[in-house]
Length: 435
Image (cartoon, rainbow, N blue to C red):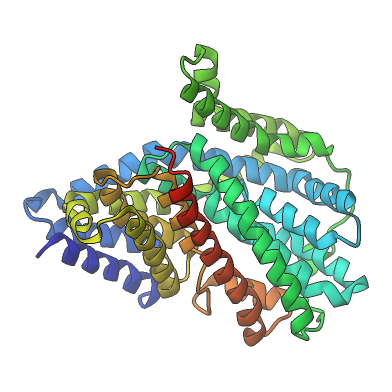
């Protein structure tokens, strides 16, 4: 059996495990990795050892980062800092441009906080706004979704982009600014579609029962500067460190501070100091690590899947078949979109497809920087969300929309943003190859 056939078997095992057998993504990825390892010639009795080795390498690359990102996100949520960021942007844009504030807030908070959590946080604010402005409810709702969903797939330290960067050996200092820039383009497209959908579709504001989130008591919130500082600090340190390295010799102190783990630790430290003033710090950290631990397991399992795929020699086979760098971009985007459509999760789609694409990218002469492949994978995780996506049902049930309304708003908007983002990536790879 050739490398490509082994890869297809492994991919089928992952999708069937998650979609049909309803196994947890961690188990599906580990099972897929084991099957690939068993089928790889010459591995023999070392099959599980190879899987464990890849799992360990994955934990080494992204384990600390995800744990620290989870701490930052949870501290922002429970201290009220996340709510303060939203309120600050609402005050900046004003009531008439509130949907733009929701768009920006979703994008900023989607960097350290998982998509569904951002949606839970901001939905009460959107619904409160819609009670006095019901004609723009869909616009405000889709603005939150557009911002948070694109940050979730393009900007580290969210898990998908982190593992993609590690698999493709792309520096976070390059991926972070590139993801931010592409994110601004794609959320602008999403916002334009949201405005069109709001005018085109007659979807009324409907009351839904959300007692736990909509009746939260008023409380004192942190200042806006301190609220956003834990997000900006690691992003700035990592990006500046990478830029300075490109210019020449780097001072030792900057080498230390711009290390991805150190920079994230500093951001987490600031977030913990902030949280300690407004809530019980031990509870916040425990909750963060509980949720972060599950994500670490999934992403490390994805790294194991990618590691054993690399051992099959699939990189060489695909390089000979695909050819040009533009074809590599198309494969990265299309494969991610296919896996996303098949099993629903954007993060699982990203970490599955990078395992297949990375060996080829590391061996091929692309003619452009590998960050474009990372961005193509991120954009590929957006198209074709439907009923097998948990996010689809969260948005449908909590917003008051039915399935048809969710498909023609949420699903179409995400697909449009993903395709547009890929077009921008393809053009940028030709105009500004960065090699």
